[in-house]
Amino acid sequence: MESPVRTGATVTTNASRVLAHPSRDEIRVEGVLHALADPIRLRIVLQLAAAADEQACSHFDLPVSKSTTTHHFRVLRENGVISQFYRGTAKLSCVRTEDLDALFPGLLDSVLRGADLQARRLGGADAPSVALSGTAAGRVEQP
Image (cartoon, rainbow, N blue to C red):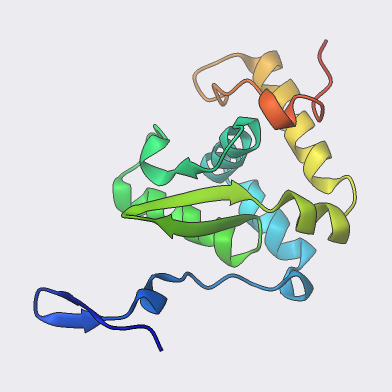
């Protein structure tokens, strides 16, 4: 058992910093689609997919409050779209690409490609301002 860490009046263990994630077998397509159906959550996934490394939650500039941002990350995590973990005090996130591709081949690529094409087509304020690059560059067809 890990030794407890004292923080103020409470005693916690490092294990309390582990976030619950569904196993690969627990991920359901309807949950993934629900998580990706929200424009803010889709924007988060687009930004994560475009990043070369995991991203801290504080790195996202979203037009919602901090508590609403936390809610969106939780929905994505609980539906198996992203993985989150703590590194120091930062909560880092990344897309569960390997799990999603194994369970639903082509789904994530199609959704990301469709969102990217829509953003280019609309080009308005509501479109995600994330250009897919890095590890996701090969996923999105360039015009």
